[in-house]
Length: 620
Image (cartoon, rainbow, N blue to C red; front, side, top):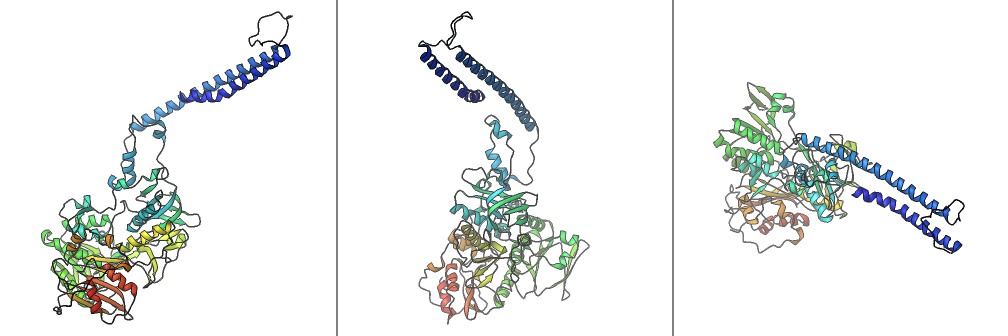
Protein backbone atom coordinates (compact mmCIF):
# COMPACT_ATOMS: atom_id res chain seq x y z
CA UNK A 1 0.00 0.00 0.00
CA UNK A 2 2.80 2.41 0.92
CA UNK A 3 4.70 1.57 -2.27
CA UNK A 4 1.62 2.29 -4.43
CA UNK A 5 1.22 5.61 -2.71
CA UNK A 6 4.85 6.39 -3.44
CA UNK A 7 4.34 5.50 -7.12
CA UNK A 8 1.29 7.77 -7.33
CA UNK A 9 3.29 10.62 -5.77
CA UNK A 10 5.77 10.28 -8.60
CA UNK A 11 3.12 10.00 -11.37
CA UNK A 12 0.82 12.75 -10.13
CA UNK A 13 3.02 15.66 -11.37
CA UNK A 14 3.11 14.18 -14.89
CA UNK A 15 -0.67 13.78 -14.96
CA UNK A 16 -1.20 17.33 -13.73
CA UNK A 17 1.21 18.64 -16.38
CA UNK A 18 -0.65 16.80 -19.14
CA UNK A 19 -4.02 18.10 -17.93
CA UNK A 20 -2.70 21.66 -17.87
CA UNK A 21 -1.32 21.33 -21.41
CA UNK A 22 -4.70 20.00 -22.61
CA UNK A 23 -6.59 22.95 -21.12
CA UNK A 24 -4.17 25.41 -22.70
CA UNK A 25 -4.61 23.74 -26.10
CA UNK A 26 -8.41 23.97 -25.78
CA UNK A 27 -8.27 27.65 -25.03
CA UNK A 28 -6.14 28.29 -28.09
CA UNK A 29 -8.58 26.32 -30.22
CA UNK A 30 -11.54 28.38 -28.99
CA UNK A 31 -9.76 31.62 -29.79
CA UNK A 32 -8.87 30.49 -33.31
CA UNK A 33 -12.07 28.67 -34.33
CA UNK A 34 -14.63 30.11 -31.90
CA UNK A 35 -16.02 26.71 -31.06
CA UNK A 36 -15.80 24.25 -28.23
CA UNK A 37 -12.82 21.97 -28.70
CA UNK A 38 -13.42 18.30 -29.14
CA UNK A 39 -11.02 16.42 -26.97
CA UNK A 40 -12.24 13.18 -28.46
CA UNK A 41 -11.89 13.80 -32.18
CA UNK A 42 -14.89 12.62 -34.24
CA UNK A 43 -14.39 10.32 -37.18
CA UNK A 44 -14.20 12.09 -40.54
CA UNK A 45 -12.88 11.66 -44.00
CA UNK A 46 -9.30 12.57 -44.76
CA UNK A 47 -10.61 15.43 -46.87
CA UNK A 48 -12.76 16.70 -44.01
CA UNK A 49 -12.11 19.97 -42.23
CA UNK A 50 -9.16 20.17 -39.84
CA UNK A 51 -9.32 21.89 -36.47
CA UNK A 52 -7.07 21.19 -33.43
CA UNK A 53 -6.04 17.70 -34.50
CA UNK A 54 -2.29 18.33 -33.87
CA UNK A 55 -2.83 19.44 -30.29
CA UNK A 56 -4.95 16.39 -29.43
CA UNK A 57 -2.38 14.10 -30.89
CA UNK A 58 0.27 15.62 -28.66
CA UNK A 59 -2.02 15.10 -25.67
CA UNK A 60 -2.50 11.41 -26.42
CA UNK A 61 1.25 10.95 -26.83
CA UNK A 62 2.01 12.53 -23.44
CA UNK A 63 -0.70 10.60 -21.59
CA UNK A 64 0.37 7.34 -23.17
CA UNK A 65 4.02 7.89 -22.32
CA UNK A 66 3.10 8.75 -18.76
CA UNK A 67 1.01 5.61 -18.33
CA UNK A 68 3.69 3.45 -19.84
CA UNK A 69 6.40 4.91 -17.58
CA UNK A 70 4.17 4.61 -14.52
CA UNK A 71 3.41 0.99 -15.25
CA UNK A 72 7.07 0.17 -15.73
CA UNK A 73 7.98 1.91 -12.47
CA UNK A 74 5.19 0.16 -10.53
CA UNK A 75 6.24 -3.21 -11.93
CA UNK A 76 9.92 -2.75 -10.97
CA UNK A 77 8.92 -1.53 -7.49
CA UNK A 78 6.69 -4.54 -6.84
CA UNK A 79 9.36 -6.94 -8.02
CA UNK A 80 11.95 -5.28 -5.75
CA UNK A 81 9.58 -5.35 -2.78
CA UNK A 82 8.94 -9.05 -3.32
CA UNK A 83 12.66 -9.80 -3.41
CA UNK A 84 13.35 -7.78 -0.24
CA UNK A 85 10.42 -9.44 1.52
CA UNK A 86 11.77 -12.89 0.70
CA UNK A 87 15.25 -11.91 1.91
CA UNK A 88 13.80 -10.56 5.19
CA UNK A 89 11.76 -13.72 5.81
CA UNK A 90 14.81 -15.88 5.13
CA UNK A 91 16.94 -13.80 7.50
CA UNK A 92 14.37 -13.96 10.32
CA UNK A 93 13.93 -17.72 9.92
CA UNK A 94 17.69 -18.34 9.97
CA UNK A 95 18.18 -16.10 12.99
CA UNK A 96 15.43 -17.72 15.03
CA UNK A 97 16.83 -21.19 14.28
CA UNK A 98 20.25 -20.33 15.77
CA UNK A 99 20.82 -20.84 19.55
CA UNK A 100 21.24 -17.64 21.55
CA UNK A 101 24.88 -16.79 22.22
CA UNK A 102 25.83 -16.97 25.87
CA UNK A 103 27.11 -13.71 27.39
CA UNK A 104 30.76 -13.67 28.36
CA UNK A 105 29.86 -12.50 31.87
CA UNK A 106 26.82 -12.83 34.15
CA UNK A 107 23.79 -10.88 32.97
CA UNK A 108 23.56 -8.98 36.23
CA UNK A 109 26.91 -7.32 35.60
CA UNK A 110 26.38 -6.44 31.94
CA UNK A 111 24.47 -3.24 31.22
CA UNK A 112 24.04 -4.05 27.56
CA UNK A 113 22.56 -7.46 28.36
CA UNK A 114 20.03 -6.02 30.76
CA UNK A 115 19.07 -3.21 28.41
CA UNK A 116 18.65 -5.57 25.45
CA UNK A 117 16.50 -7.90 27.52
CA UNK A 118 14.18 -5.03 28.37
CA UNK A 119 14.09 -3.31 24.99
CA UNK A 120 13.98 -6.32 22.67
CA UNK A 121 10.49 -6.33 21.07
CA UNK A 122 8.39 -9.44 20.81
CA UNK A 123 8.10 -11.33 17.54
CA UNK A 124 4.52 -10.19 17.02
CA UNK A 125 5.19 -6.47 17.46
CA UNK A 126 8.70 -6.22 16.07
CA UNK A 127 8.96 -3.86 13.11
CA UNK A 128 10.71 -5.34 10.08
CA UNK A 129 13.32 -2.57 10.06
CA UNK A 130 14.18 -3.17 13.72
CA UNK A 131 14.66 -6.88 13.14
CA UNK A 132 17.27 -6.29 10.48
CA UNK A 133 19.26 -3.62 12.36
CA UNK A 134 22.50 -5.08 13.78
CA UNK A 135 23.68 -4.06 17.26
CA UNK A 136 26.50 -1.58 16.72
CA UNK A 137 28.58 -0.26 19.61
CA UNK A 138 29.23 3.47 19.66
CA UNK A 139 32.14 4.85 17.67
CA UNK A 140 31.85 8.28 19.27
CA UNK A 141 31.13 9.44 22.81
CA UNK A 142 30.70 13.09 23.75
CA UNK A 143 31.91 12.15 27.25
CA UNK A 144 34.33 9.22 27.44
CA UNK A 145 35.33 7.97 30.91
CA UNK A 146 38.26 5.55 31.04
CA UNK A 147 37.97 3.30 34.09
CA UNK A 148 34.92 1.90 35.85
CA UNK A 149 35.61 2.73 39.48
CA UNK A 150 34.24 5.20 41.99
CA UNK A 151 35.76 8.28 40.34
CA UNK A 152 34.24 7.45 36.95
CA UNK A 153 30.81 6.83 38.39
CA UNK A 154 30.93 10.06 40.41
CA UNK A 155 31.96 11.95 37.27
CA UNK A 156 29.16 10.38 35.20
CA UNK A 157 26.56 11.31 37.78
CA UNK A 158 27.94 14.85 37.97
CA UNK A 159 27.94 15.24 34.17
CA UNK A 160 24.34 14.09 33.92
CA UNK A 161 23.30 16.41 36.74
CA UNK A 162 24.64 19.45 34.89
CA UNK A 163 23.86 18.21 31.37
CA UNK A 164 20.70 16.05 31.57
CA UNK A 165 20.90 15.02 27.92
CA UNK A 166 24.56 14.01 28.06
CA UNK A 167 25.72 10.75 26.51
CA UNK A 168 28.38 9.24 28.75
CA UNK A 169 30.37 6.11 27.92
CA UNK A 170 32.40 4.32 30.62
CA UNK A 171 35.03 1.85 29.44
CA UNK A 172 36.27 -0.55 32.11
CA UNK A 173 38.68 -3.45 32.06
CA UNK A 174 36.66 -5.24 34.73
CA UNK A 175 33.62 -7.39 33.97
CA UNK A 176 31.50 -5.62 36.58
CA UNK A 177 29.47 -2.44 36.66
CA UNK A 178 30.84 0.40 38.83
CA UNK A 179 30.94 -0.62 42.49
CA UNK A 180 32.37 0.56 45.81
CA UNK A 181 35.59 -1.07 47.00
CA UNK A 182 35.60 -0.43 50.81
CA UNK A 183 33.11 -3.22 51.65
CA UNK A 184 35.45 -5.75 50.00
CA UNK A 185 37.71 -5.55 53.05
CA UNK A 186 35.10 -4.49 55.60
CA UNK A 187 31.40 -5.34 55.82
CA UNK A 188 31.26 -8.20 53.32
CA UNK A 189 33.48 -10.32 55.59
CA UNK A 190 31.04 -9.97 58.48
CA UNK A 191 28.00 -11.09 56.52
CA UNK A 192 26.01 -14.10 57.77
CA UNK A 193 24.74 -14.84 54.25
CA UNK A 194 26.50 -17.94 52.84
CA UNK A 195 25.78 -16.68 49.31
CA UNK A 196 27.37 -13.28 49.85
CA UNK A 197 29.99 -13.95 47.16
CA UNK A 198 27.18 -14.28 44.64
CA UNK A 199 24.74 -11.63 45.83
CA UNK A 200 27.42 -9.13 46.89
CA UNK A 201 24.89 -7.70 49.31
CA UNK A 202 25.87 -6.89 52.86
CA UNK A 203 24.61 -5.36 56.05
CA UNK A 204 26.17 -2.06 56.97
CA UNK A 205 27.23 -1.42 60.55
CA UNK A 206 23.85 0.27 61.02
CA UNK A 207 22.05 -2.95 60.06
CA UNK A 208 20.73 -1.75 56.72
CA UNK A 209 21.32 -3.99 53.71
CA UNK A 210 22.57 -2.79 50.37
CA UNK A 211 24.41 -3.92 47.27
CA UNK A 212 28.05 -3.30 46.56
CA UNK A 213 27.07 -1.82 43.18
CA UNK A 214 26.33 1.90 42.98
CA UNK A 215 23.33 1.31 40.72
CA UNK A 216 21.48 -1.72 39.30
CA UNK A 217 21.86 -2.63 35.60
CA UNK A 218 18.57 -0.90 34.79
CA UNK A 219 20.18 2.45 35.61
CA UNK A 220 22.45 2.20 32.56
CA UNK A 221 21.64 2.24 28.86
CA UNK A 222 23.02 -0.27 26.43
CA UNK A 223 26.20 0.86 24.66
CA UNK A 224 24.50 -0.07 21.39
CA UNK A 225 21.72 2.43 22.14
CA UNK A 226 23.80 5.27 23.55
CA UNK A 227 23.96 7.26 20.30
CA UNK A 228 20.23 6.91 19.60
CA UNK A 229 18.56 7.05 23.03
CA UNK A 230 16.40 10.15 23.25
CA UNK A 231 17.58 11.75 26.49
CA UNK A 232 21.11 10.39 26.60
CA UNK A 233 22.34 8.30 29.49
CA UNK A 234 25.29 6.40 30.93
CA UNK A 235 26.55 3.25 29.20
CA UNK A 236 29.29 0.88 30.34
CA UNK A 237 31.57 -1.18 28.09
CA UNK A 238 32.84 -3.95 30.37
CA UNK A 239 35.79 -6.23 29.79
CA UNK A 240 37.54 -3.69 27.55
CA UNK A 241 40.81 -1.93 28.17
CA UNK A 242 41.96 1.29 26.54
CA UNK A 243 45.33 0.42 25.03
CA UNK A 244 46.20 3.59 23.13
CA UNK A 245 45.16 7.23 23.35
CA UNK A 246 45.46 9.68 20.45
CA UNK A 247 45.09 13.12 22.05
CA UNK A 248 45.45 14.95 18.72
CA UNK A 249 42.82 12.87 17.00
CA UNK A 250 40.62 12.76 20.11
CA UNK A 251 40.19 9.00 19.98
CA UNK A 252 41.19 5.84 21.83
CA UNK A 253 41.84 2.27 20.77
CA UNK A 254 40.49 -0.60 22.85
CA UNK A 255 41.93 -4.04 23.51
CA UNK A 256 39.59 -5.58 20.91
CA UNK A 257 40.73 -3.14 18.22
CA UNK A 258 37.68 -0.87 18.44
CA UNK A 259 38.31 2.85 18.04
CA UNK A 260 36.14 5.40 19.83
CA UNK A 261 36.37 9.14 19.35
CA UNK A 262 35.42 11.62 22.04
CA UNK A 263 34.79 15.29 22.68
CA UNK A 264 35.88 15.24 26.34
CA UNK A 265 37.68 12.48 28.20
CA UNK A 266 38.27 11.54 31.84
CA UNK A 267 41.12 9.24 32.86
CA UNK A 268 40.18 7.42 36.07
CA UNK A 269 42.23 4.27 35.70
CA UNK A 270 42.87 3.90 39.44
CA UNK A 271 45.80 1.77 40.51
CA UNK A 272 47.32 -1.69 40.37
CA UNK A 273 48.17 -3.60 43.57
CA UNK A 274 51.88 -3.81 44.20
CA UNK A 275 53.59 -7.11 44.77
CA UNK A 276 56.87 -8.01 46.45
CA UNK A 277 59.69 -8.76 44.03
CA UNK A 278 60.64 -11.84 46.05
CA UNK A 279 57.16 -13.23 45.37
CA UNK A 280 57.28 -12.38 41.67
CA UNK A 281 60.61 -14.18 41.37
CA UNK A 282 59.41 -17.21 43.35
CA UNK A 283 57.75 -18.92 40.37
CA UNK A 284 54.29 -19.94 39.23
CA UNK A 285 53.50 -22.19 42.21
CA UNK A 286 53.90 -19.30 44.64
CA UNK A 287 52.09 -16.83 42.38
CA UNK A 288 49.11 -19.19 42.08
CA UNK A 289 48.87 -19.13 45.87
CA UNK A 290 49.16 -15.35 46.17
CA UNK A 291 46.29 -12.84 46.15
CA UNK A 292 46.76 -9.18 45.25
CA UNK A 293 43.58 -7.85 46.80
CA UNK A 294 41.75 -5.20 44.78
CA UNK A 295 38.67 -6.41 42.87
CA UNK A 296 35.48 -8.38 43.37
CA UNK A 297 37.19 -11.47 41.95
CA UNK A 298 39.89 -11.15 44.62
CA UNK A 299 37.28 -11.04 47.38
CA UNK A 300 35.52 -14.11 46.00
CA UNK A 301 38.79 -16.02 45.63
CA UNK A 302 40.06 -15.16 49.13
CA UNK A 303 36.72 -15.94 50.74
CA UNK A 304 36.81 -19.38 49.13
CA UNK A 305 40.41 -19.91 50.19
CA UNK A 306 39.56 -19.03 53.80
CA UNK A 307 36.99 -21.86 53.88
CA UNK A 308 39.09 -24.50 52.12
CA UNK A 309 42.65 -24.00 53.43
CA UNK A 310 44.17 -24.12 56.88
CA UNK A 311 46.45 -21.07 56.93
CA UNK A 312 46.66 -17.62 55.35
CA UNK A 313 49.50 -15.12 55.73
CA UNK A 314 48.94 -11.41 55.10
CA UNK A 315 51.99 -9.35 54.20
CA UNK A 316 51.40 -5.69 54.97
CA UNK A 317 50.43 -3.67 58.04
CA UNK A 318 48.56 -0.77 56.46
CA UNK A 319 44.83 -0.13 56.10
CA UNK A 320 44.03 -3.02 53.79
CA UNK A 321 46.30 -5.57 55.49
CA UNK A 322 45.00 -4.75 58.97
CA UNK A 323 41.35 -4.79 57.89
CA UNK A 324 41.72 -8.18 56.19
CA UNK A 325 43.65 -9.55 59.18
CA UNK A 326 40.83 -8.59 61.56
CA UNK A 327 38.17 -9.91 59.19
CA UNK A 328 39.88 -13.28 58.73
CA UNK A 329 40.93 -13.47 62.38
CA UNK A 330 37.37 -13.08 63.59
CA UNK A 331 36.26 -16.15 61.62
CA UNK A 332 39.45 -18.14 62.28
CA UNK A 333 38.11 -19.97 65.33
CA UNK A 334 34.98 -21.21 63.54
CA UNK A 335 36.90 -22.31 60.44
CA UNK A 336 39.99 -23.69 62.15
CA UNK A 337 42.03 -21.19 60.16
CA UNK A 338 45.45 -19.86 61.13
CA UNK A 339 45.84 -16.19 60.26
CA UNK A 340 49.29 -14.59 60.26
CA UNK A 341 50.05 -10.93 59.58
CA UNK A 342 53.60 -9.67 59.05
CA UNK A 343 55.03 -6.24 58.24
CA UNK A 344 58.31 -4.32 58.66
CA UNK A 345 56.91 -1.63 61.00
CA UNK A 346 56.77 -1.91 64.79
CA UNK A 347 52.99 -2.02 64.84
CA UNK A 348 49.85 -2.03 62.72
CA UNK A 349 49.46 1.09 60.59
CA UNK A 350 52.83 2.21 61.85
CA UNK A 351 53.28 4.61 58.92
CA UNK A 352 50.13 6.49 59.87
CA UNK A 353 49.53 6.27 63.62
CA UNK A 354 51.90 7.45 66.34
CA UNK A 355 53.81 4.56 67.89
CA UNK A 356 51.75 4.29 71.08
CA UNK A 357 48.48 4.08 69.13
CA UNK A 358 49.99 1.71 66.59
CA UNK A 359 50.97 -0.65 69.40
CA UNK A 360 47.47 -0.45 70.86
CA UNK A 361 46.04 -1.32 67.44
CA UNK A 362 48.36 -4.31 67.17
CA UNK A 363 47.05 -5.64 70.47
CA UNK A 364 43.52 -5.20 69.13
CA UNK A 365 44.36 -7.23 66.01
CA UNK A 366 45.91 -9.99 68.12
CA UNK A 367 42.74 -10.24 70.20
CA UNK A 368 40.86 -10.96 66.97
CA UNK A 369 42.82 -14.21 66.65
CA UNK A 370 45.67 -13.03 64.41
CA UNK A 371 49.31 -13.96 64.90
CA UNK A 372 51.14 -10.67 64.30
CA UNK A 373 54.84 -10.61 63.35
CA UNK A 374 56.27 -7.09 63.64
CA UNK A 375 59.55 -5.84 62.16
CA UNK A 376 59.31 -8.67 59.65
CA UNK A 377 61.17 -8.10 56.37
CA UNK A 378 60.67 -10.81 53.77
CA UNK A 379 63.93 -12.18 52.39
CA UNK A 380 62.85 -15.17 50.32
CA UNK A 381 59.69 -17.04 49.30
CA UNK A 382 59.60 -20.62 48.00
CA UNK A 383 57.14 -23.46 47.49
CA UNK A 384 58.06 -26.68 49.28
CA UNK A 385 56.06 -29.79 50.06
CA UNK A 386 52.70 -28.19 49.35
CA UNK A 387 53.39 -25.08 51.44
CA UNK A 388 54.54 -21.55 50.73
CA UNK A 389 57.63 -20.96 52.83
CA UNK A 390 58.44 -17.34 53.78
CA UNK A 391 61.90 -16.62 55.16
CA UNK A 392 62.49 -13.35 57.01
CA UNK A 393 65.77 -11.47 57.26
CA UNK A 394 66.02 -12.15 60.99
CA UNK A 395 65.85 -15.91 60.38
CA UNK A 396 62.20 -16.51 61.19
CA UNK A 397 60.33 -18.86 58.85
CA UNK A 398 56.58 -19.01 58.21
CA UNK A 399 54.91 -21.86 56.35
CA UNK A 400 51.46 -21.14 54.97
CA UNK A 401 48.91 -22.33 52.42
CA UNK A 402 48.15 -18.93 50.92
CA UNK A 403 49.62 -15.43 50.82
CA UNK A 404 47.86 -12.07 50.59
CA UNK A 405 50.15 -9.23 49.48
CA UNK A 406 48.75 -5.92 50.76
CA UNK A 407 51.78 -3.69 50.23
CA UNK A 408 50.34 -0.67 48.48
CA UNK A 409 49.04 0.57 45.16
CA UNK A 410 50.80 1.64 41.98
CA UNK A 411 48.92 4.28 39.96
CA UNK A 412 47.87 2.99 36.55
CA UNK A 413 49.55 5.37 34.11
CA UNK A 414 50.06 3.14 31.06
CA UNK A 415 48.26 5.63 28.82
CA UNK A 416 50.77 8.38 29.60
CA UNK A 417 53.21 7.25 26.93
CA UNK A 418 50.79 7.14 24.00
CA UNK A 419 48.94 10.25 25.18
CA UNK A 420 52.07 12.25 25.97
CA UNK A 421 50.81 13.14 29.44
CA UNK A 422 53.12 14.16 32.28
CA UNK A 423 53.80 11.79 35.20
CA UNK A 424 54.79 13.22 38.57
CA UNK A 425 58.25 11.97 39.49
CA UNK A 426 57.72 12.23 43.26
CA UNK A 427 54.20 10.92 43.87
CA UNK A 428 53.42 9.13 40.62
CA UNK A 429 50.16 9.56 38.77
CA UNK A 430 49.11 11.95 36.01
CA UNK A 431 50.11 15.49 36.85
CA UNK A 432 47.07 17.81 36.63
CA UNK A 433 46.27 21.42 37.42
CA UNK A 434 43.93 22.73 40.10
CA UNK A 435 40.93 21.92 37.90
CA UNK A 436 42.15 18.33 37.44
CA UNK A 437 43.02 18.99 33.79
CA UNK A 438 45.89 17.28 32.02
CA UNK A 439 44.97 18.79 28.61
CA UNK A 440 42.29 21.19 27.41
CA UNK A 441 39.76 18.35 26.97
CA UNK A 442 41.31 15.66 29.22
CA UNK A 443 40.79 15.39 32.97
CA UNK A 444 42.14 12.93 35.56
CA UNK A 445 40.50 11.89 38.85
CA UNK A 446 40.88 9.32 41.62
CA UNK A 447 43.98 7.34 42.54
CA UNK A 448 45.73 8.18 39.27
CA UNK A 449 45.59 11.98 39.71
CA UNK A 450 48.48 13.92 41.19
CA UNK A 451 46.95 17.30 42.02
CA UNK A 452 48.06 20.50 43.70
CA UNK A 453 46.51 21.09 47.12
CA UNK A 454 46.35 24.82 47.90
CA UNK A 455 46.97 24.20 51.61
CA UNK A 456 49.16 21.09 51.64
CA UNK A 457 51.02 21.17 48.31
CA UNK A 458 51.11 18.56 45.57
CA UNK A 459 49.57 15.25 46.58
CA UNK A 460 48.19 11.96 45.34
CA UNK A 461 45.47 10.30 47.43
CA UNK A 462 44.30 6.68 47.31
CA UNK A 463 41.02 6.69 49.20
CA UNK A 464 37.33 6.27 48.45
CA UNK A 465 36.28 9.75 49.49
CA UNK A 466 38.94 11.36 47.29
CA UNK A 467 37.66 9.31 44.35
CA UNK A 468 34.12 10.59 45.03
CA UNK A 469 35.14 14.22 45.41
CA UNK A 470 37.66 14.38 42.55
CA UNK A 471 35.39 12.46 40.19
CA UNK A 472 32.49 14.76 40.95
CA UNK A 473 34.63 17.86 40.42
CA UNK A 474 36.08 16.52 37.17
CA UNK A 475 32.54 15.88 35.89
CA UNK A 476 31.51 19.42 36.76
CA UNK A 477 34.54 20.88 35.02
CA UNK A 478 33.94 18.72 31.95
CA UNK A 479 30.60 20.52 31.63
CA UNK A 480 32.17 23.96 31.98
CA UNK A 481 32.23 24.67 35.72
CA UNK A 482 35.97 25.51 35.87
CA UNK A 483 36.18 24.93 39.63
CA UNK A 484 39.50 24.42 41.45
CA UNK A 485 40.09 21.45 43.73
CA UNK A 486 40.09 22.78 47.29
CA UNK A 487 38.14 20.10 49.18
CA UNK A 488 40.08 18.15 51.81
CA UNK A 489 39.00 14.57 51.27
CA UNK A 490 38.86 12.17 54.20
CA UNK A 491 39.45 8.46 54.60
CA UNK A 492 38.47 5.90 57.18
CA UNK A 493 39.38 2.43 58.33
CA UNK A 494 37.40 0.04 60.51
CA UNK A 495 38.90 -2.87 62.42
CA UNK A 496 35.52 -4.50 62.65
CA UNK A 497 32.32 -2.90 63.97
CA UNK A 498 33.85 -1.78 67.29
CA UNK A 499 37.01 0.16 66.42
CA UNK A 500 37.46 2.66 63.64
CA UNK A 501 38.91 6.00 62.76
CA UNK A 502 38.50 8.80 60.26
CA UNK A 503 41.38 10.93 59.03
CA UNK A 504 41.99 13.99 56.91
CA UNK A 505 45.01 15.81 55.56
CA UNK A 506 48.58 14.55 55.86
CA UNK A 507 48.70 11.79 58.47
CA UNK A 508 52.28 10.57 58.64
CA UNK A 509 53.76 9.03 61.77
CA UNK A 510 57.09 10.75 61.04
CA UNK A 511 55.46 14.12 61.83
CA UNK A 512 55.13 15.48 65.37
CA UNK A 513 51.76 14.59 66.87
CA UNK A 514 49.62 15.64 69.79
CA UNK A 515 46.91 13.26 70.97
CA UNK A 516 44.00 14.03 73.26
CA UNK A 517 41.98 11.02 74.46
CA UNK A 518 38.94 10.26 76.56
CA UNK A 519 37.07 7.23 77.76
CA UNK A 520 34.89 5.65 75.09
CA UNK A 521 31.21 4.88 75.54
CA UNK A 522 28.93 2.39 73.82
CA UNK A 523 28.07 4.92 71.12
CA UNK A 524 31.74 5.51 70.18
CA UNK A 525 32.02 2.73 67.60
CA UNK A 526 31.65 2.58 63.80
CA UNK A 527 28.46 0.56 64.25
CA UNK A 528 26.88 3.12 66.57
CA UNK A 529 27.99 6.01 64.37
CA UNK A 530 26.36 4.59 61.25
CA UNK A 531 23.21 3.74 63.17
CA UNK A 532 22.97 7.38 64.20
CA UNK A 533 23.75 8.87 60.79
CA UNK A 534 21.83 6.28 58.76
CA UNK A 535 24.70 5.82 56.30
CA UNK A 536 27.11 2.96 55.82
CA UNK A 537 29.73 4.53 53.58
CA UNK A 538 30.49 7.51 55.78
CA UNK A 539 32.01 9.73 53.09
CA UNK A 540 28.79 9.68 51.06
CA UNK A 541 27.12 11.92 53.62
CA UNK A 542 30.02 13.91 55.02
CA UNK A 543 31.51 15.05 51.71
CA UNK A 544 28.51 17.30 51.17
CA UNK A 545 29.35 19.32 54.28
CA UNK A 546 30.94 22.72 53.73
CA UNK A 547 34.09 23.38 55.68
CA UNK A 548 33.28 27.00 56.26
CA UNK A 549 29.83 26.35 57.72
CA UNK A 550 30.78 24.49 60.87
CA UNK A 551 28.54 25.18 63.85
CA UNK A 552 30.37 24.37 67.06
CA UNK A 553 28.37 24.04 70.23
CA UNK A 554 29.54 24.72 73.73
CA UNK A 555 32.46 22.43 74.53
CA UNK A 556 32.19 20.06 77.46
CA UNK A 557 34.62 20.62 80.33
CA UNK A 558 37.76 18.51 80.35
CA UNK A 559 37.51 15.64 82.86
CA UNK A 560 40.49 14.24 84.72
CA UNK A 561 43.02 12.50 82.42
CA UNK A 562 42.37 8.86 81.71
CA UNK A 563 44.88 6.10 82.24
CA UNK A 564 47.76 6.08 79.81
CA UNK A 565 46.68 2.94 77.98
CA UNK A 566 43.04 3.93 77.59
CA UNK A 567 42.71 5.05 73.97
CA UNK A 568 38.97 4.58 73.78
CA UNK A 569 38.41 7.69 71.70
CA UNK A 570 40.35 10.82 70.89
CA UNK A 571 41.83 13.28 68.43
CA UNK A 572 45.39 13.15 67.08
CA UNK A 573 46.83 16.32 65.51
CA UNK A 574 49.70 16.08 63.00
CA UNK A 575 51.91 19.17 62.87
CA UNK A 576 54.24 20.68 60.33
CA UNK A 577 55.94 23.95 61.27
CA UNK A 578 53.58 24.13 64.27
CA UNK A 579 50.56 24.15 61.97
CA UNK A 580 47.99 21.33 61.93
CA UNK A 581 48.20 19.54 58.56
CA UNK A 582 46.44 16.31 59.49
CA UNK A 583 43.89 15.00 61.99
CA UNK A 584 42.86 11.48 63.01
CA UNK A 585 39.54 11.06 64.78
CA UNK A 586 39.88 7.84 66.78
CA UNK A 587 36.42 6.40 67.42
CA UNK A 588 35.09 9.93 67.01
CA UNK A 589 32.55 10.18 64.21
CA UNK A 590 30.48 12.80 62.36
CA UNK A 591 32.95 15.56 63.25
CA UNK A 592 34.89 15.73 59.99
CA UNK A 593 33.69 19.23 58.94
CA UNK A 594 35.33 20.61 62.10
CA UNK A 595 38.61 18.91 61.28
CA UNK A 596 38.43 20.16 57.71
CA UNK A 597 37.96 23.75 58.86
CA UNK A 598 40.94 23.55 61.22
CA UNK A 599 43.22 22.44 58.38
CA UNK A 600 41.76 25.01 55.99
CA UNK A 601 42.40 27.86 58.45
CA UNK A 602 46.08 26.85 58.71
CA UNK A 603 46.65 28.64 62.01
CA UNK A 604 49.06 27.94 64.85
CA UNK A 605 47.41 26.82 68.09
CA UNK A 606 49.01 27.42 71.45
CA UNK A 607 47.00 24.70 73.21
CA UNK A 608 45.67 21.81 71.14
CA UNK A 609 43.81 20.49 74.18
CA UNK A 610 41.49 23.45 73.78
CA UNK A 611 41.11 22.71 70.06
CA UNK A 612 40.21 19.11 70.90
CA UNK A 613 37.25 20.36 72.91
CA UNK A 614 35.63 21.39 69.61
CA UNK A 615 35.10 17.69 68.90
CA UNK A 616 33.21 17.13 72.17
CA UNK A 617 35.24 14.03 72.96
CA UNK A 618 34.61 14.41 76.69
CA UNK A 619 30.83 14.35 76.48
CA UNK A 620 29.12 11.19 77.73
